[in-house]
Image (tube, rainbow, N blue to C red):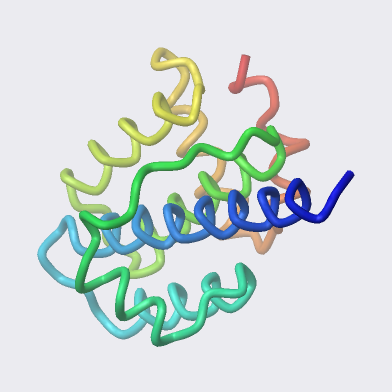
Length: 145
């Protein structure tokens, strides 16, 4: 693999991470209340994805500049969906618009529409029980095909 190919992989990963941040911001704001607990979770996830706070502010102020990028890796795609469900439920209140958006993301991420509600509920339960994304993936794989 030459340098350009490696750089391309890095840039694709960065684009996917920025897309993920945009999706999380959209989830946090859809109920009309983007509070501190949601912003703290957003910063934590951004840090894991090598997105600085200044980049986060830029994404938040200019979301139309970020294209939706779906991770090609099944595990990474699940991790992003897990984060979206976590963002939806971090404030302990599920607004109907958050649930609609989460269902939409489930379909966009390739999960069966007829199983999305069960998948979301299972992920929420696992989050409440302190299960990380990898442990949760093992438990919910039946909802993903």
